[in-house]
Length: 502
Ligand code: HEM
Figure: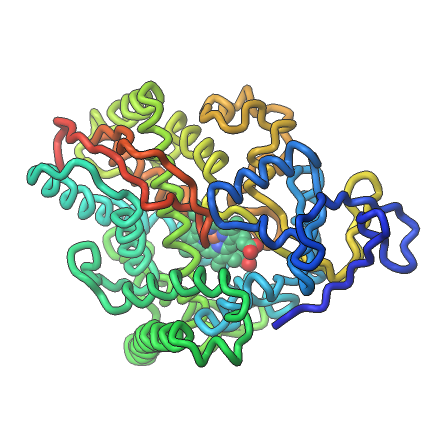
């Protein structure tokens, strides 16, 4: 598991260039507290850990190098001009780093998220059509119905006098509910009662965080012998059994009944929602190659992993930020009410999404300030040049800090202030294309970003139409785990608004 790190370190603490390179290289190395452990003690998944990043960004402006104990070292980047060439590098020379992604393998297998090179390109080509807007359009109804279920529950809780709720748990059940319907057409009723599959996914996410934090558990041989490793294996079995069952069932259906109607029938009445499994079973590349059952399972598991916590984090932090800024919240609510006032339906429809201008600005500013994913890591099979002719030697682990870019005061004045007006088109002119990268960028960007933005807009719009949110009364401390959460949960007060209900 331990990686060889091919960095040449100069006596002044800066990185040297790889052999044969004529370019200069001088990435700063902040002082360490321990010659043996390097900066390991400073890499914390806590509020303080994020403050350390703020300080690095203030002091080093664009990049610096870190040493994580005697085995690992990494180069951190937190300026758009520096992350841009790295994120835009061809996928053929980009490798997902094992240190950060390897623990996911037993769960996700060789999926799009973890694969590299030609294998990744083929998967990406086959999967991209599944996220075309013609397909996503159909999922908007699902987003509405899952949100309605959550709101009905909130109304019941409010009626019983419970008006202070931990948002993350409610919202992640709702996003899981939506994803299960979009991926498998499976109605788990998970928002109302417990479901073995969902429990297993939540357990796997918790165990991943736990493993990342215990250096001895990084060693596979030991991990699979621990109680945690065994729980991980058991939860993986539950998830894999479920996914295999659905894929097998659909494969049989396809063999007996043929292609689902929506692929052949063009009329609106005949269309039915085609889920991701249907799409993956039918996808073919230019040479007519299809995905095997094993590959379809890996991709479906990846959508469930990549799509539930991230969107839940995104939605929760938007509601939190709007709870702290009642003026912006009112403006969003007015926009949603205007949009729906002459309509027959209480649903937010696909065509409405582009008319939620201010709400979208509020969502984007929240994704900047509280990005669900705080960093991505990469290695490159060639030396990489960043501004100032600095060279990142091939094989180095690069940590591209989304959090750092989004909090860089050179790019975002008063970076800790929540100000949706930053995303007013007028104010966005001249800003770097890589100043705002919640979904990463380049060939390995988030394939689900349109799905996510549609879901965020539907859930936020419907929630603000029906509820006023105010802060929950406890100090919020950020908790950067697999996605950004809050220590002890994120609590908000809810007040029901007197608007027509679903
Ligand atoms: C607010 C919500 C979301 C955020 C912030 C987000 C963020 C990201 C980021 C930063 C990456 C790059 C990861 C890396 O380079 O290691 C990524 C990749 C990915 N995301 Fe998302 N994501 C979101 C929602 C979704 C959804 C809803 C899905 C699927 C239904 C999804 C599926 C994926 C997949 C499959 C990849 C890997 C793409 C590839 O390597 O080609 N994500 N996401």
